[in-house]
Length: 75
Image (cartoon, rainbow, N blue to C red):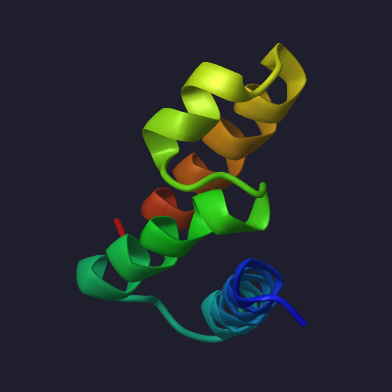
């Protein structure tokens, strides 16, 4: 498994745990920011900027929706 694939899978697993966590508890802002910092990897991008430049409108919308869900859970 390549490093990039490994990083993408790790990010997916971390976000899965985060979403399971928010069903039972309120995350801190720091936890939400950590989750958001991993989100672009799930979409195969090197950074959020990379995703915004290379992603299609549907991918960008999905990314934005998930990002907002993560951050809103910490409010």
